[in-house]
Image (cartoon, rainbow, N blue to C red):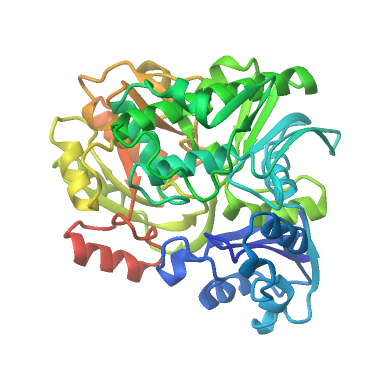
Length: 487
């Protein structure tokens, strides 16, 4: 049986194909349309998915009629009474889906299922925090012997994710898109306004929180004379404190030593690291794509209710070309920035070796050079992709391994590695092992043998505001726009 899980019509549409109990394909629509965070399913995405078989069933990642009740509560009457976003009607435009059996699952249920059923855990506490689902904004649940039980939920309008997005907009960035920039900006400020956030906007409770106001439409110019970096540091600190409280409560309530973090807020790798250090769990697992796009896999997982077999996030469009180790290595040794577009595209927001821009992480000028190529803000650092067996020599990781770049760690040698060390002394680390990516592992190993440095600077193969390179034609366009060789 072939099942398609679909997340669409909100932001960052995605489609996953599950054949039996194996995830065989998953990809973002934006990679095909070349429109960042495209909410619509692209016909080329459908065409790619059909290479893995005609689906018998389609599972939608949330319950649309329940969501419309929340639209009414939020005063979004245009959305509440519109039929344009009803999934059955929408999917009929695609010939391949007209005769499929149609199912829906809850928004947070799909998040939780994506995380748990791919984690390998027998039992787990599952915490989902996002902007908003149908009504839920935060849920704490547990899985034991495959049975999902809810322990706590916080509902609209009390959304920690919406509060963080409101501060993203307040600081001049795009809400629902550039929260990661706000997280980076926080390192340059001081949390001097954290008390004011608690006074005016959020109240902490035992293992939870309540918002003092509905921030769905933002917070305007709250504290209009505050510096953006201090606002960023303040909301980051408040968010971390609340999440650690929730995780500690979840540890006590569920009794599990395993934690699965899901929802868009689980992309906040600084908060993830505090949770890993302070909440008392033995193991922390975060799906490589914990936001709504990842719920395409989660929808299928929730419908099936059993473990899914998958080989990691390399699930998208394939570029079938030889991996040119020697050519890539020689350019890296010459101090060049080089792109790699090879194998199947990563499913998730972060490049993990198949659609990556790489260079030597040492040297004072490296960060500025790569930021100029990508057109990014000059204050933003880059991530190290480090051989797993050497990671703890250079970084104080809060977990044993970080293969999907979801935790930060204090860098022990910021003097040697300024391009991958943030102003706060941390790095967002990707640990690379032979089992997760043998080609990338061999490249870094060869670089290590020649230089003594067991890591590379790794960032996404794209220009700011554009989706990651998907096809070889996209790679050629990137090379034409930037002058950077892509192999």
